[in-house]
Image (cartoon, rainbow, N blue to C red):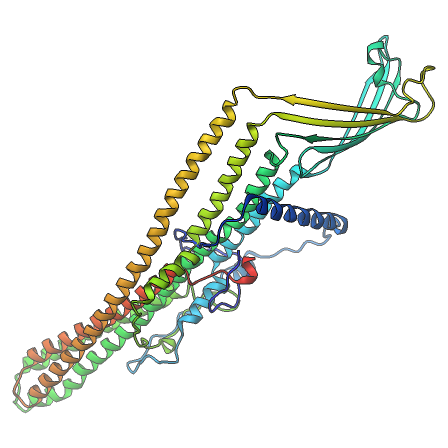
Length: 550
């Protein structure tokens, strides 16, 4: 399976450890008609031939590695330095901190997930596991060398027999064999066929299934299932990739929101600090009572504590983001406050696009593709069960020729020998095959029902994500209006306070309402962009790189 990565430079093959957990897999489908069994078998036959040719070339060229004669000792400190890279925590922002539009972009975090997220690297190695399982099934078609020595040096009949031979299982069913044997000594009259001429006997032949095991047998069925198993790891890897990108996107927007709330904490703190000198002067001149100054100082201390809380949240969010944002070597990077961007403008998705996106999700989600592969494996099981219903009719042809000086005056071993044999094995009740057919048929019916529900769930997830995105968009817009109203009321109350028409309590309340409205607006934007990440995941926009997925 291959697909194009969105905003991805590639994937490194390196595995490290992480405390993050793998999410549940989502998947991709293809709505094209499933290939016929003949097409699948032909394609698999070509794969088998290529694998055998590659394996033969590898065996010819490969040489055993030479052991190194030098051993160097590495200290545990050096090992820790190479394996564990401790990211540096950036300094806290000053009071004049402000986000920038040229800060860290979300695409950089997503690219980092593609390139060096440790759990994605670990998921990539499942390809090697599946390829190893397939190679293991190919071992059933390996050539086998056989040899034996059977000697009876004591007794009335002293016999000495040696055998060597090769057996090659055929992909089309049956096998070919060839061998050489030599038998010497005084053989029992009923075992005269064990005796050979002086130079021994050469023998070759083949066996061919004529009914059962002609189109499919246990060896080919296992190989085909393993072949589909190699493809089956791709939707699982893609599902994990989708989850990792979604988690990284969540962490990114949490970090951006933490920066926005720190700005709010700075602004409200500066308002209280700017009033301190003016209130102190008015108290000294007798225009205000001393408790007014005390109350403002309390307000400054309280807001300073809230700013410290916002700083802590920002640093924690940056540390969490570093699990997904990494350098070229895969080491975590904790982004500093200077890289915090502002929230981008909110965009509304057209409702007419949802139907198209639902169809796109059915084509890209890995769950459906995984079900397709499972369907093909069950088709193999069904074909194997049908094969077991057939009678076993095997044709065996063998030719033998003794060479060398005759060991018997009659020379009964000298002429060329040709044997033709037909073996028939007919199951009567066929209960084993019929039971397997019934079982596999039930599994196929279950799978069809599960596929239908999975498709409906995918469409529901897309529509639900769209509904959440629209709701969050409206909520964010309303929150922005509320912020404007609250800030206008707070400005009016501060102006009244400066003119002596209000008191500090009313100003504090108005400012608190403005802060709460601003923080709710940040939360609404955070919710919108998280819903946007959910919509991206529902559409399975994150695909495996083409060079990795083929």
